[in-house]
Image (cartoon, rainbow, N blue to C red; front, side):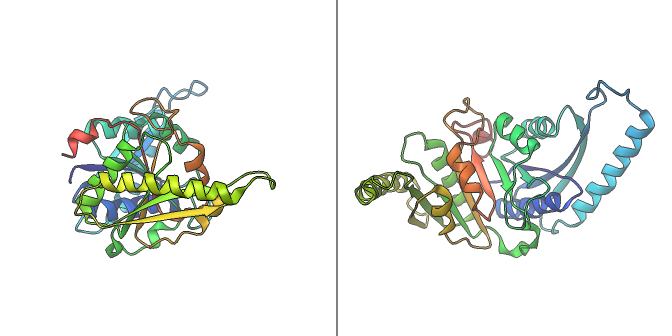
Length: 296
């Protein structure tokens, strides 16, 4: 696999986290890394008229910032800089990804998040509602991981309902391209009244999870190294908190079934998982976009 990865950059710690992880992913995929700063378009504000002098200053400052970001990227990664205006940060990234036929859009956590945690801001939420390619959410502190760590393992969260075909396909392609092992994960939270027979429900749930995981494993190429894990708890958050994460781990989740075709929408289960996951998360549209052909 080669192609392009688009990373949204801001001159902040989360911005550096996003570029650092995107560089590791680009190196693993032998892909070009396109670092983008999205500036306000001239007609975005209807309150104050555009100031040409300020716009020139902002563009010059953005060029300085993005040059500093490029300088931090390891020499083995080909990186291009993009500074462009758009109606919104998310719109600018989606447009650039479409132009480049990029495989992924990578973004950092919103300001205010603690180290090792995800925090979705308005920009990321908009992106998750508008992107037609997978979006990579990078937690705070990812820049602390050594570049040579690479991508050590892919954990893919498999639900108990149908519709995971795109997620399994994405996992198989990514694992095959980077040579990483795959961990198939099923979560079995139980959130029921005390009077409920939780033991019987857990047994039934475990049986169903085993069947779903076995089916998913059968869809992966035979040569991939795969493992299976079932995490149980009284809530999604508790179940995820029991899992171990490698320094070079990446998690893949599917977008909600409420999402429009070829669009992303983070479902309630994935949103709850983000509270406990301390590694980057790739959110995959429930149907494939043009990026599928671009990566073949």
